[in-house]
Amino acid sequence: MLKKGINPFTLFETDDPSEYRWEKVDGGVRVIGYTGSKPFLKIPEVLGGLPVVEIGDYGEDVFCTVYPTVLIPDTVCRFDPDAFCEVYNHGGMWFGSLTVPEEHPFFRMENGILYSKDMKTLFFCFDRGIQRYVMPDAVETVKKGAFRYANGLKFGNIGFSKSLKTVESFAFEKCEPLRHLGGKRELPILPEGIERLGIHSLGKDSRFQIPANVRVLDGVPAASFEIQSAAFYTDTLNVVYSKDKKTVIGYSRADSYYGTDSSVKSVSLDGNAEEIAPYAFASLDRLEKLDLGSSVRRIGEKAFSSARIKTLRIPAQIEEMDDTSFGYDRCNSIIVDKNNKRFRTDKSCLFRVNDDGTCRLMKCFKPMEEYVIPEGVVSIWEGAVK
Image (cartoon, rainbow, N blue to C red; front, top):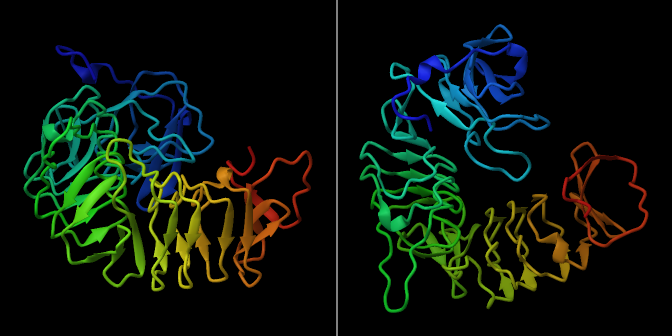
């Protein structure tokens, strides 16, 4: 944040275009990094002969020595979905803060919070010290990771927009949940008009009652949540499914203080389930037995990342599985059905088979003094060997 009384626009300098890292996108280029040394930076309107139309997240293999305060040009009309969100395989934001001219055609900055010009979309809160916040009633969407710097902001001190419809993944993940010292605790009130909630959008250690109008859950929105919407089905083990039971949203009764549940040691999924959403059972840190059923084909990232499954069994029908789907470090062994065409094992290593027959090394489960990587392996997950 800039000090009061300083005209910020006198501080910004345009650096050598070669100091930027960028990539081509529809309509122009996306800036994904800066390797210069200026603390206040004015991004040029053109790089490589193309207009700068997008700000992206920290690009892979980009090393930044400073995280500048950036003045964005009028040509920037969008942000990459991960521009403000930390992701597990690279570094999040390449800039420290943004400054937006008042006359900018697409965005505006109000009290350290970045919005679209019409205030319908809230992109990011740069105010790390924010403790109370009343959301303008024009806001309809809160973007991914929007309040990830707001560690001191409590849910009880947030006034939500009456027009709010979508809260994307990890939007309020770092906000402080409500605590109680006994007795009944009032749950934070969410607007009835909300229709979509992302993964951990309301926090990974918080508790919420989900309004009846919600029709889409991209994953578990909070550690503990109660569903009022008829668009979902909850079984006797507190596992939430889409109404047709084909998508497993996740476990809905984790401890809202720690964000985990140590009491659940076994999970058996409904036979109709075809897909497991990201982070679905990440709160189950004592899970030892897992029955995926006969229909599950896709398993999202970190779905079982805290599990303590001794022997992981991958059925024949599994087609998609993320590198981070399971807490592989806690597994002793893995068994892949011989009829599975997408995954295979070699000694203590798990591989994913690509369409062209090449492979990706996903994980080595046991320490080995020496291992010869088989022919055809073209990529290795960064967490494959520890």
